[in-house]
Amino acid sequence: MDLVLIVDDSTMLLNYLESSFVQYEDKFEAIFAKDGMEAIEIIKSKDISLLVTDLQMPRIDGLGLLAYTHTYHPKIPCIVMSAHGTPAIIETLQSDILQFIEKPFTAEALTEAIMSALKEDRPEGTFSGISIINFLQMIEMEQKTCLCEVESPGNPAGFFYFNSGELHHAVFGEFKGEEAAIKMIHIDNPTISFKKIPVRKIPRRINRELTGIILEAVKQQDEG
Amino acid sequence: MDKVLIVDDDEQLLLILTELLGKYKNKFDVYPVKDGFEAIRTLQEQKISLVVTDLYMPRINGLVLLSYMSKNFPNIPCIVMTGHGTEELRNRLKKQFTSFIQKPFPVMELADIIMATLGHDQNLLGTMNGVSVSGFLKLVEMESMTCLCEIQSEKKETGYLVFEGGTLLNAFYDKLRGEEAVIELFKMDRVKIKFRKPPKKKFPKRIKQSLSTLLKQAGNA
Image (cartoon, rainbow over all chains, first blue to last red; front, top):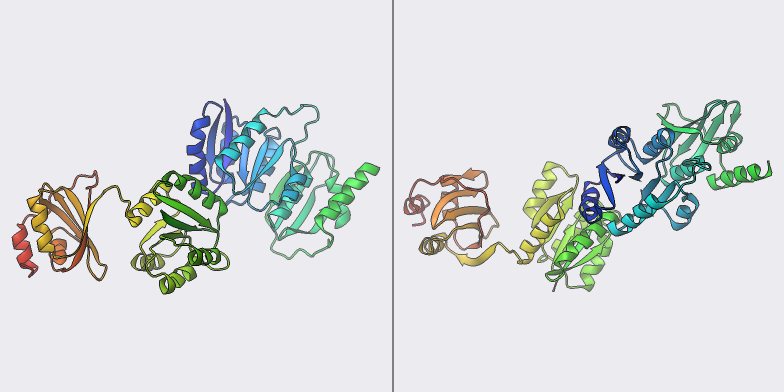
């Protein structure tokens, strides 16, 4: 039986889903957590087939949880329950491994998304997990202020700094600003983690919109 | 059909409440709106029987909505639901408005409060208005009633009397219990009484003196 982990800090939503899922208990088993911390404990101890998570939560939030899952269990597909995804953003973010459902949704709609995610065949060879572009776009969507570390074998550590969802700075080895951001977007399968924001003010070195930087990176990749 | 207006900026919660309260569509219709601004517009356009509102919302919040209602629709009862709020705010709301429910709550609990407020209370056996407590006591004894009586004075002070087979078991009024509570309740005149089926919980007999002795003590014999 597939085990589906549902993570949201709204007890009322979890209760609603739990009672609605009773009628699908022959299809999948649902397990519930109310923040990223609880979810990580469950992922460590159980064999999860699918992760369904909210983004805004106390303690470890959805992005932190997705970063953990991406690093340690990159094959677990994820459905993100988002309150402010516009259809355009959702379209650009969707992938085999990562899907979105916009709040408010009915239990029936979520069940459909769960069933289709569980059925999905992900070819082993081409597998790459949640992309760095996905993470950057989710940070923008959530208007988060955060320091995001990007690690990959053979490369120096890199950082993206976001202030209220706007990319303000990036550092990658000796590169800084836009150039560093573009180089980091090119990295295949990096490990992503969220760091504590330093007390000292981080200067703004990037003024271009994230979409522009992503497009530039994709263009360079196609050319190169 | 009664129309119940539900106000909350959490659209996911609004959808859940609308779906789950939809089971009662033979009793009331649900009108979901996502802030006080939309709520006021709906109140002006529709004949609303009851408002269930959150407190913290953008544009016009719950407190503003409640004060608008007390000026413009003072006869529409309100149920306030919130996840936060200080003790002081809660006490103020309890005094001022019909009911209060703290998030998270089981939706069935909200449904019960809505039904009770609308008068669709399944446990409600009957109500009496403007009666004296001594007069109604004779009735309870004569009929050997087993019930929970909610007594409400003209000043909206509320107390409870628990009867089993016409015998008074216990009473509750403010912080008072037992005989002390009975005496205070017996002092009330022209009360509104609601008879309900007693809760499943067993009440021990806390009233030792006879009803006539207690009535005399209350000076209401």
